[in-house]
Image 1 (cartoon, helix red, strand yellow):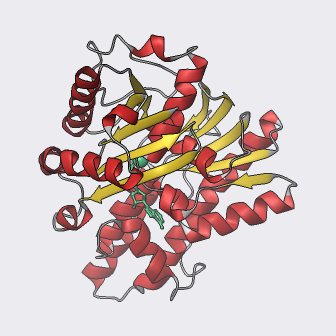
Image 2 (image 1 turned 135 degrees about the vertical axis):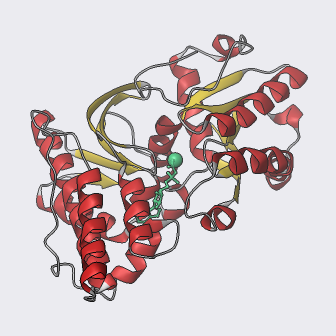
Length: 343
Ligand code: KG4
Ligand code: ZN
């Protein structure tokens, strides 16, 4: 079963062909990072325009690199939620056109389900159930994955996502966008114990995250120093910030794993590329006798291979391709809980 998937939920236009959910035949990602970096973050209108320009060459390249034509594809898949609405709509409408023109089914995929499925590509023997820390620019959640299409959110962020916290803190420190990698790089020269930063809690919801207080604390620290004319070591502040975010994520993840007695830990999403997070997860899994699954860096950020992987499991759990022929009413959704379907 060869699925050609399209991903355009944020600032990457991507297409990939994956066989039976696990074998990547081709995967192409056109990133708009450099252009958005000029503005310090993703500009939705620019993202939509670039998707429109990129989508045809990216899909063509994915087919060419796979040495396949549209006739060889069994079904199409597309990210339909969550994400920037104008960006999602480009992928959804293009995928509908492909499906109509080639008279083949179209499988809608939730972006976060896709991030989790990146691990099925990276770890051929991995199967649910497991507990997944899903951390990206738009989401931070602890998700109990009972089977390929059954998800329960045990904890999630009440305000900023982990990646967003990295991006906003980096901006306040004068570091370039995207902030995650900038903070990671400069932290290598810093002392992560130099600043004691707050670890905000959500009253009555111990597994929920809140990062906006931490971000504001960092911004206030920088403003106060500027007003007083004192110097703050950015490497020290970045290292302390990174350490605090990683500790918050891991403390809650392992508390959830204890609560449901889960021995298998998975990590997914753009922030799973963070070196300190990867090392800390490894250490804490080893210490608590748990198995860790995390994608290689190439599958942490947005890509379409992960969407094709999840599409395969959406298909098998729906009993086959016939469930995906009525795709014309499909719409994009800016927000959608991972446990739900809007189609
Ligand atoms: O999953 P992703 O590519 O896009 C979304 O679905 O949001 O995640 C992007 C986020 C950005 O906020 C970026 O700063 C963060 O992932 N990120 C990192 C690292 N690499 C990317 N955060 C921390 N450390 C990194 N090395
Ligand atoms: Zn993503």
